[in-house]
Length: 68
Length: 201
Image (cartoon, rainbow over all chains, first blue to last red; front, side, top):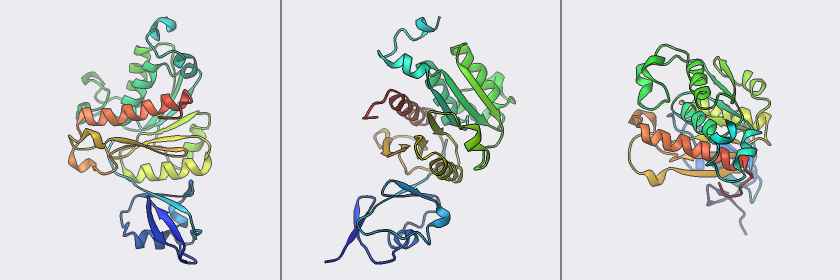
């Protein structure tokens, strides 16, 4: 049976070694200004390529918009 | 004087807010309106920062006046806040915040508030804050431009990260006083709820 992760509420098939950058590419989140949390913990942009997502994780991606 | 000022507050609110220190990063459309709301509500101590001077184009949404044009935002805002409550403590930093100085300048806050305009700045502040102070909540504004669609302005809580706004609109659409103020007051309202220990913000 395949394992999944949840990305902004949507289920996504999980694969071994899948990184934050991989997930953003799969979800086509090409927006420059993003904040990523895995199971509640913030993951800095600098380490997205090497941060591996565990099976069953809840990933939250926030798109940041200018204005204030 | 103080007690009279907060006579109409929600019961139980004044004592908690008076004992609190809130940090605000940025004193523009979000920050100036957030600071005013928090001082009116009774927050005892604010730490504010900005490096900008007030221009005429700020007056369509920021809490400044004609006579303030040309003044530093932190200086004018401090005066306006003290004019509401002379006993509030305002610690004002007239400088540009970065990932190095922010954790030091805001090391004693109960809650941090992001009130920048640029998305890049919002990102480094959220990343820096939650890396250095993962247990101190940061409240952010995200998507408050344009006009209309009031119902899309929402509060989203991700543990210690609270996000207020529509998450969609960009400042290139233009900024409307009322819509910016809704987002600013949504942030201020979230801070008040957090300080009161409410489960539902």
